[in-house]
Image 1: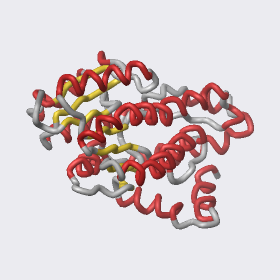
Image 2: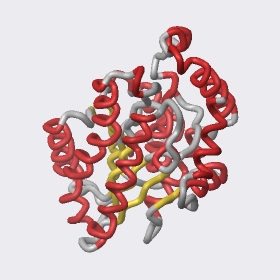
Image 3: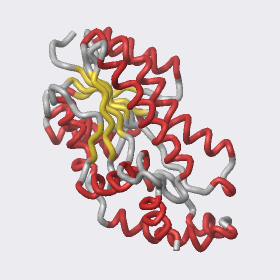
Image 4: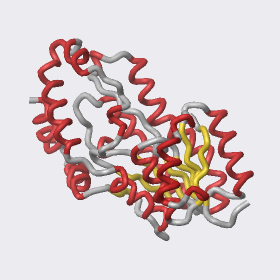
Length: 281
């Protein structure tokens, strides 16, 4: 057992999750860095060694769609470290397409990872977090505040996560658990690359939506050219671990704050409609 605080982070093989794991360890947290395939841990372990925090980083396998595996992982963490003080829900998967061109299985798969995975890990962690009076930090997206073209399933899942966490927050607070959502914008990571999209094939199959999809993809390429680094996006997560009373909602950049504000102040939906409509023309 250890007396230091323990955080479990999902989806740490690359991107924000990897950067958050290194940041948490640098801040002194015993960091349980989980991923679906521990064979992809090399980049994380190399970064931990370079940062001098390899003794604080423990890699464990966790598939957020495997309920039995989630319970087993959390039980193992508490048995080994004596406590769980924070959960960072970061694991996620993008899904690009519009509903007429996507199958219901595509939509269900996006919801399974991005929403039900978050729910399942949070549910399993809460008894341990109640015991430590800990916190749940969930990486959502500005796509959980502003619905974006050709991201219907992904944004639906992120909107669902935001609604779930906003509803949970006051209830969890009554038992000493803080709840925070962190909303990044575009981040220069492997998240989009991991989609493995064949863009020419996607455009060829888009039928009447091809001109809109082509315009959207051009705009998206430009936004990722000016994206935050994973470390920049992860910094607010590490901050939220340390704050005595973290806020419910945190954006990771000024751009993300301005973008989210468009929707949060848009009572009739016209401002968002005008903004995102321009992306597909």
